[in-house]
Length: 562
Image (cartoon, rainbow, N blue to C red; front, top):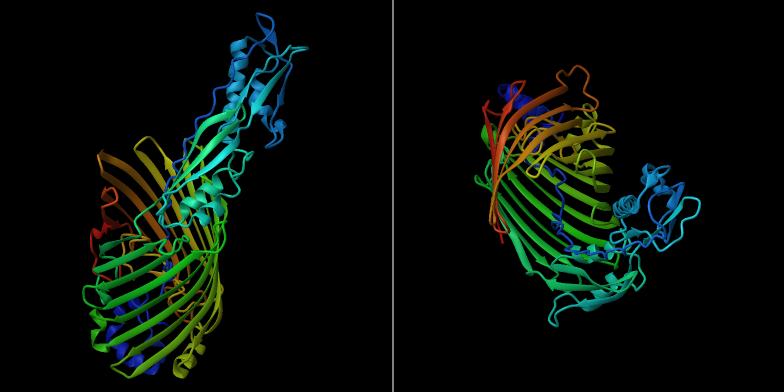
């Protein structure tokens, strides 16, 4: 069986005898020493594109005749982006009615609004000069296309001009100013680390074309943060300090290098990582490598056992934006990883060496909709397949007679989030994350259900499971904005359920567990300088078995940005 902290605390007096007879118990408590799949390279925060769009005002219609007329149908001209029949529902309220010139202009305005919702950012509809016969009214559409395109960069820019020109190459004169055609190259360029892009449509060079100027500026090459939090388990030291350094675009090709070091206040955990990624084409595809190494020394209730552990993970990854627009995005990634674990219990001379080799395919999508006002959605689907190698013979033999984590495994995760705008200062977060497994998983492949990223009323080590879900509903309110300072508050309810072992050992009990909690939080930030959050959470059910019954449980994190 795997060594689980909750169980160990319940049967600690008998643990010494059990651990001698079962070498697989050499694994450390879940969450205390195993890799839990943290992304190798935290992504750069997506910046606004800065695009300013000022459409040309449509001409004033000149209709022959006076008075009113009854419209039998509308004929749309000039639209090539999609079938004009798809707009019939927009104009339906004006058909069969007696309309004035003002009413017709209103119908054209409604059509303009729908065109822009469909991604034609500067399109407009207008009533051209015409003679109306048999109640058929023509509405002309100007979609808007690019005239000239000009790239402006400082002579000493770190980004190579050839890179910027390559990314912007699809923006040729005549390109439709539309979602996916116009904004995608601009956003891909703006996504490059250390690059700030400010595009602007400056003037209309002709009735249907606008000129574009793209200004590219450097951001500071070095950046990062210091972070202090209490998110770690007690056995390793709850309080951790993290230093993170980024070198943005150091070679002028849109590359990114990172280094990070984390250490707990007791020295129970030290984690170091480094990564490097670079674009391999002008369409946003990136390739990266990363390495992480962790050393642990388990204390607390397990101090006398002298449990030590270390692991090293190497990863090769490729990412690509299949869809990149200002309000709809789909990104895919594929990574190959190998982790080598070396766990030991020095009090009994027990050693457990193991390896995980796996491939992970991930698709992430986000979009904005107008349902009930405005909603921002994000969905992530991940599938991981690989193999566990238990290299220590005694551990492999014990595993074969129990949970059988050795060998091939598959794991799938799905997470959905929606932030619903309620008013100018309030929003509601709804989130659901799930995991499914093909078999019993080794520590490190499991789902973290409790803790600051799950059910916040319970400690990090309270519930880790092969299968399960975590759901959250959270009300968010901006309290005050004064200059660079911003204050906010939250109220939330979390719930989660876990099946600890996919296939429990016959005779075992308590394999499924559900926990819930609620609480309040306060956040403060100073733009680009500092942010801090504190959360108070109370459990709604169950009694924690891994930690003192803290009421409330308090989580905090403080970050200093640079």
